Length: 174
Image (cartoon, rainbow, N blue to C red; front, side, top):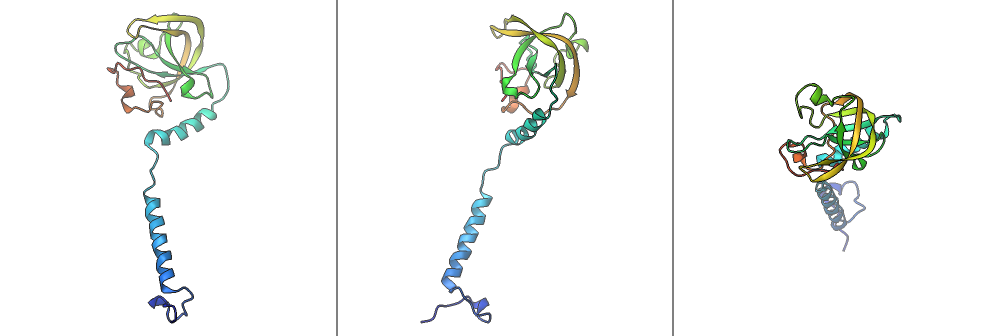
């Protein structure tokens, strides 16, 4: 008994028996279906790719990158990291403003720059400062100058609620 060919290929002389051709079509359909079911990366993970490229292209130099992290009940300023270092290495700091006021205090609008990113001039004093609301000590950063880099930078926190000024949890950048 001769192998059956698919009806559309009878005139062309079908080299693949009908049952094998049907199996190949089913396999192709399943492959396409499964490819459509792949999980896509969440928005945070997608933004991290761009963020990591931006960090890798930062010029080296004697400055820091700061991200304002405002919490209504706390007195720390935000996270500071060295250029070309990931946000996971950033330190939550207390800002010494004896030489230069922080941007929000200079504008007399506490926390108005929550999640803004700055290029900071200054240094770590080597001292730690007690922050009573968190009952913790944080490194002191002496601010000498700053330049606003972005008022809508990519997210550095996985939790979208991390920018809530009333939140009591102290989020850490990733």
